[in-house]
Amino acid sequence: MQFPATTERCNATLAFTIEDGDIDGVDVSGHTFVLMVDAPPLMSEGGWNVGVIVDDGASQEQVEAIGAVVSGSLGGPPAALGPLLGNFLGIEQMPVSVTSENGEHTVTFGDSSYTGRPHVNGSGDVVELTGVDTHPAGPVLGMAPVSTSSISAMGISFGGEGLSGFANPFNWAA
Image (cartoon, rainbow, N blue to C red; front, top):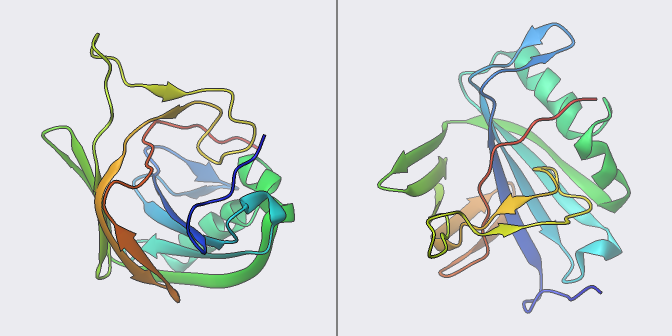
């Protein structure tokens, strides 16, 4: 069963830090990128506007390699999203950081930022959403509601408090 967003558009940012990675011989370890999404309220309808922001420390070769993965042209999890994409907004470089302090994660890129904290149950375990069919971060997502956000990049602007958020390690392979 699918439910549409309760707002006019479904907007999202997905930040990924690559701890260790190689794309067709290009080492991308230590780089961070943000996937910007602007979609209709029922995301499964497709027609998404998507852009990519890569940290400004990446070389042109690394940016191109990350772009090839995120576009789905090399297969792997991003390829499953291909039929939903409508308009590719391009790739930009700017300072990007993901920091953790006192259990909170903050993602900052350009003038945009958002902060979330993993939601834990009474046993201290992160509450997880399982059985996710197609999400670029995997089939299990750790709940990490966003407490504050202010996003404006690549023509996509949104923000607020108490928004949905997830945080978890992932592994992509084509």
